[in-house]
Length: 476
Image (cartoon, rainbow, N blue to C red; front, side, top):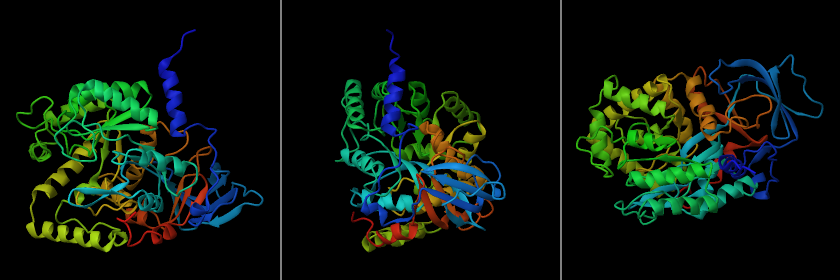
């Protein structure tokens, strides 16, 4: 009997990711139920504006029927029959979008001195409050912790989005980060990828000082397991990574070292050196267009993380949500921001503007653009709030609001291979929905006016989730 190993691996990965159609809503614990505002077997959202996540124009005066965690009916309010016994919710003047599917999130935050605190409790609540119903942790500094919390959320023991839990970073020596393991060689990369796949990690992330041989080994093992691998690279160029089979690259083009003069194989020239070289690149020039064409040809997705880079660009608005931080962390960030604004260094603002043009060109060339927020750097990137801000920034880059919403919903689901269940609003899909008091298709800033977040048909109260952590983010 012949066995297709790839098919077996894919089935195993689907089970691990919870993508099977038979997946049922979990029984919610009392700890979760205190944040729930709607939980009846059948709900009818009536007279809603539906922005379905596909990029299609909004549909006015729609009814969405939710039954047992799935979308059972969708159509004009006049034609969709409201089921007997359903909880009726009138959404006149309000919009419903798919739950956000964000692809560069973390469960840790900078707390000073190069230290990152693991904040799984507060962050998962904030992500959900902001409309994020599915997310990938693009880099793990907490080992089993992130895998365990992903499972706890899946079992209904804690509130939060569905999590694609990334294994600990795959990186070589030289970064001197005490929470990171340093790979020794390609065989070690295979061993580490295998170990964490067995432990329950559902994706991988290569990091700055990985070598080409180590990356090739990690890609091979991840794909053998039916899993995907992304990268925030430096020692390996984007073009090299694409040739090695990487699935995704983080931070748009910000961290590409393809244009760094004198770049040596397997050596990171330094992130600032790479950015300085990128700043001199013409987005309309042949060199950049050639790189974009190569990434598209290799089906490599890019993740836009404009929110974290915005915090380094003088002249940008104050990030939203700072008041949820522990007062010490909020004060630390405000001091950083004051120093940044006083310097008025044009380097990051100019590079920030160029990167945004490059991301638009990548999409116009046929590339799959994903989105995330990366709550790291100097702070100021607050889960949930920053995910909404990412949509605003994409619109500021030149995407329409409908395109930006698609990038943050259906595109993420497409990359994850979960479009059967999430990413858009359609009959049969999981009822992961965000109710917004306004029309983000006409005024993108309405994306911040989240009233209710449905995950598997259960409606969560954002105000309660935020209140539970306000002023304490940084502590747990």
